[in-house]
Image 1 (cartoon, helix red, strand yellow):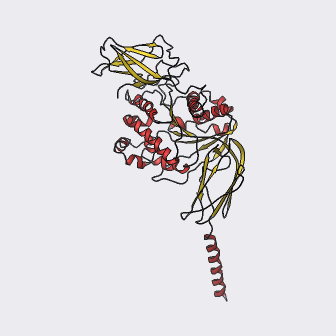
Image 2 (tube, rainbow, N blue to C red):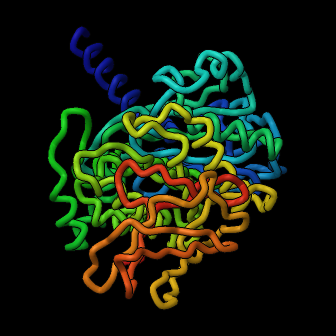
Image 3 (cartoon, one colour):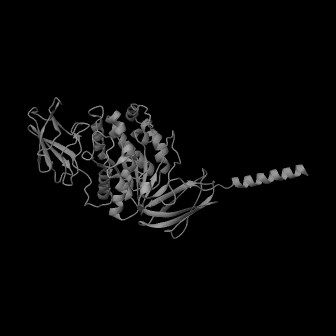
Length: 462
C-alpha cells in the first residue's frame, strides 16, 4: 500500500510537471512597460517569447479589434500595429497562457539618446542653474527610460531599465541633454515625448556598433586596435551595442541623438568612417532611415594640439550621410572642462535641428555656418558656407583663419566678411591652395550666422 501510494504520488507529480511544461508564460522585452511612450502614426512592432505554437492576442485602447499571432518554433512572436496620433493614456493587454497588462501607455514622439559621458551627464552631476532646473522639471507627459550599464560579447535579448514619469526626482538622475531636448519638443509640438537614454561615459564609438562591422572592414579594424583598455568602461568593438542597443531593436523611434567622440581622439583620423558605419548599422538594425543628430564635441585641451579638432572635423564631414545634423558647441563650453555645464543650450541646438529638419518647423535655424567650398582669386581664398545668412563676427574681423600655399605650411591669415563669404589672405602666401579655420583643440572662434549659431571648424584639405 505504501509503495502504491508512492507510485501514485510520483505519477501525479509527473503529470503536473508535464502539464506545466506544455505552457510557458509569454514575456516581453524590458523596453515595453506601463507608462511607456509609443511612436505616433507609425507601424509599431511588439515582440517577445512564448511556448512554441502558443497563440497570442494583443488588444489596445485605440484598436477596434485584437491582433493575433502564433509563436514560432523558436518560441518567438511579433505583432505589428498601427498607432494613432499622439494621445492616451491607453491600456494594452497581451494574452497567451498568461496575461500581461500595460497601463498608462501614451502615444507621442520617441527619441533614443546615446553616447559617452556628456550624454550620460545628469543634472546632479553639475549643470548650469541646477537647483532651479530640477525643481521645475515636473512634466508627467515626458517619459524617461534609462538603460542600465552592461556589456556583452554577443547580441542580447534583454537589458535592465523601466519607464518613469518626468518628475524632479527622476529628472535629476536622467540625461540632462535628453531631458532638455524632450522639454523643448514637448513645448513646441504639444505632444508626449519619450526619451530613452543608453549611454556610458568614456566609451568609444567602436563599442557602440556591431562587432561584425568592425571585423569586416580592415580600416576600421586597424583603427579599433588603437584603443587601449581603460578602467572606466569597455573599449572592445560591439560590447555596448550587444548589451545596451540590440535588446531594444526594433522598438519604434523617431530618431537618435548622439554625443560622443572624446574617447576617439586616439584614432581621430578614422572617426568619420566609424560614425558613418555606426549610423548605417543602427539604421540597418531598425530597418529604416531615421534621423541621426549629434553634438560636435566641444573644444578642450587634449594632449595633442589636433586630436580634438580632428574629431570635430570628422563629425562635420560625416554630415554627408543623409538625414544627419550637427550642433556646434564651441561658444558654450569651457576649454578646461571636458564636460561643459551648459547642457541646456547644447540640447536646444539639437532640438532646433529636429524641429526644423524632422518636424518641418522652418522658423528654427538648425545649424551655424558650415564650410561649402573655396574659390581662389590671385592671392586670396574666398570661402563660401552653408547656413550663412547674416554671417557676422562680434569682433572687428573673424579670427582663427589660416592659409597655405603649395608647400602646405599654414600661416595666420587676415579674414574679412563680404556678404555671406569670408575672404582670406596672408602676405606670406602668394598662391593659396588651402585654408583652415579654428584648427586647434581649444579654438573658440568668433564667426556666427544670423541665428547666432557658431561656425564649425574646417580644413579644405582632402
